[in-house]
Length: 369
Image 1 (cartoon, helix red, strand yellow):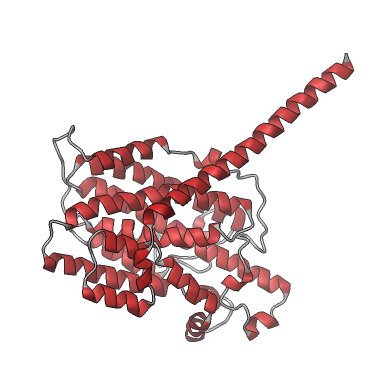
Image 2 (cartoon, one colour):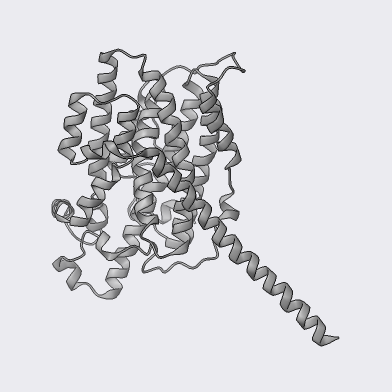
C-alpha cells in the first residue's frame, strides 16, 4: 500500500524540493584527523545494526494504544472533550497521537539523512566526512524502522508539521557548510532525543521501547559529532558570525517549541485550530514536555560557544535557561546503557527459550527410545 493512502490528509506534493546551494568540498589529506572524531567514526562503524533483525517485529501492538504512554500526555485529557468521549473514541485519539508523533520522527529522520549526506559533501575535513557517512546510514535505518512501525503497526501517517518543514528548509538552503550541523545535529536531533526519551521512559509497550532505545543509541553519537565539529569551528569565527548563528538558533528553537502543539490531531477530531492551540497552551503536561524537550539543546548550544546575551534572553523567555547546566555526556552514557541493557535482557530471554526447547526435544527423544 502506498504511504499516500495512509496519510490523514493529502500532502501538498509527492516531492518537496529544496534548491541546493554551497560548494562540494574535496580533501586530499587522508591521514590527518582528530583523534576524538576518528574514535567516534570507529564507534559509528562498530555500532551499525539491522532494523529487520535487532527489533522484534513479531510483537503485537494494541491498535487503541500503540505507544502505551500515559493518557495524561494527550492535550484533551482532563477536558470536557475527554469526559464526553467513549472508550472507542479515546482509543482512536491515542492512535492519532501515536501516528502524529512517529510521523514527525519519520520525517525528521529523512531530513537528518539528507543533512548528513549534505555534510559529507560540504564539510572540508576528511574525518568529518568519514563520520557523517556512517550517520547517513544510521538515519536511513531510523527512517526505515519508523516507517515500518507506522505502516505495519499503526496504519496511519501524518504529513510533516509546518514548523519542522520550515526549519529543515532553512537548514538545507543555507550555503554555509556548518548550518546542516547546527540545524540538524544540534536543534532537530537534540529535540528529537528528548522526545524519544520521554516516550521510551514512559511506555509500557516493548516494541516502541525497542525502536526508541536503539535509535537513541545512535542519535547520542550524532549530537556528540555536532558538538565536536562545531566547537572547534566556532572558536575561529568573529563575533558577528557567531551572532548570525545565534539568531538561527533562536528562530529554530521557537519553531520547534511551536511544533509541539499537535493541533493537527485535534483538528481531525473537529476542534478548531485556535481552540486546539489554546488547549495545548493550558495543558500542564505539554508545558512540562516542552521544557524537558530542550534538555539536550540548551547545554549543547552553550557547549559549542553560542551563548550571547540575546540567546540567553530567548531561553529565559522559553523557560528553559536552567537546562544549560545539564550534563550531556551523562545523558548520552545513559542512552547507551539503556539500549545495551535492553539487548542483554532480550537476547538472554531468547537464549533461555532456545535452551529450553533443546532440553525438551532431548527429553522427548529419550521417551521415544
